[in-house]
Length: 394
Image (cartoon, rainbow, N blue to C red; front, side):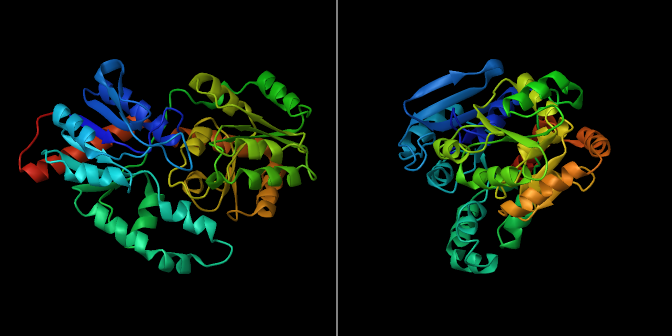
């Protein structure tokens, strides 16, 4: 099967979507399929990946508020690539220009909308949460859901990346045909990678002794991740118990966050770590995972943390909350730094041996990205068979 993802959310410096597609290209090759990505870029070029996967960049204008990403403009170069590639499945995930480009192509491939996010949650509900109820915000921005419904209508299938997003969209009357829960690189992450020496070194970088508690936060420096709130919570919790935090990431808000932690001696910021083995060792050697984002529908980093055997402190909504369980996690009211600080203190006031043991048991249940890819191919196969009225081999 040849799958082409026309993807406006892919960027070399991107976050979850880039990580997902980079892995997906490799896994599909291992499974005997070909995954190809067409993404906006600063120039026209192609990258070959092992196993026959391809990444095409089409020269496109950048996004006005985040230069890491671009938006397709002209349909012709994308259509020319699709004419050349003749895919079995075309994937789209953006409600902007790529949706129209995919549906206006005249080839026979099935069109699949793969939902990675929900703009209603990421923007209006976050922007106006303090001045209006969720219901009021949804009514005011109901035009967006009506627009989305029109965008989804021509697609042969609409899938989400997990049950949180499925529940959100269906509650607002939007179509979802299947839930294809994402997985992680299970082979990299393990509680067995915990290193007391590495933990002590990280605490020392936070100017704390070995008997203190170490939080780790991982993610892009973007407003939707709510890092200032998390930093404030860690600072408040530090007045009750000895606790430090390491924050790994980069993004448009990096300089703002650097200023925000200037007076927080026990909070340190570091660049992203792309080497999976090194990242896995760092995660396993922390004492708990902390997260502020409540708009992402799938908690990929939270799942990686759980696979590392980490207890967690996460908001009471969003993808990370779907991973949390009372035996090894504390949840707090989304966006509330005081509640988050209380959750930090509550988690570290519990018997850490029991909490960590519960997390280690739960780590075995995390879905792998290979399992996700196999399920997705089978779903696409069924859609193709129904549309063509034939049974596919294999």
